[in-house]
Amino acid sequence: MPVQRADARRNYALLLTVAKEAIAEYGPDASLEQMARTAGVGSATLRRHFPSRQALLEAVFRDQVETLCGHARELIAAPDARAALLEWLGALTSAAATIRGLAIALTRERVARDGAAAEEACCSAQLTEAADPLVRRAADAGALAPGVTTDDLLTLVTGIALASEHHPDPAAEAERLLGLTIAGVSPPQR
Image (tube, rainbow, N blue to C red; front, side, top):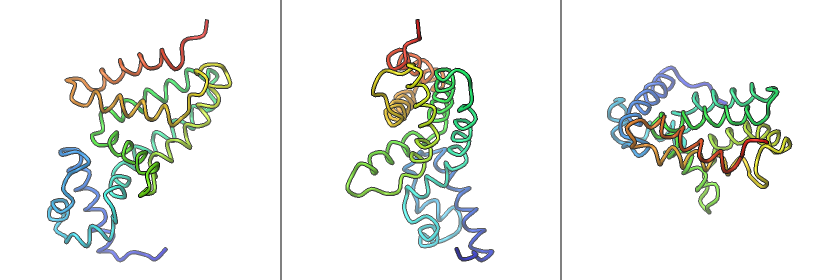
């Protein structure tokens, strides 16, 4: 990989900062042209660093996704497979409900991955890879309904986050809805 010039590195960092602020305020459909203007660069510079909106969203959410993946890896060794999976799902739900644009980005990735014009689904792929061992352990322990997949759980979490987005307390509503969902996909052992 070629080394970037100092001005290119500065532009990338500035564009990423501006994008994070714009997406936090306006959501994942924030104007790319306005982001470039705010950063004081041309739209071609923005597109050179982020060739698609999805590439920009992946960069914006990279730290949060890596944190969630790290948390999943930490939970692999937890003694209670069901509790470990539920803790991770809670963390993912909280992030998706409170980090504006994350749920939409994950939903779009899944649609693109399944469609003909699929873009690389980096965030969803990372989350799936990190959560798969938790899901397998919970399934092996009989703590998941038969046939429940990691992708099913990610779809449910993003749906919950989108459903609670405009609630006065999105995190609390998302947690409540996750509890209802868990009762269906992973009833407590008797």
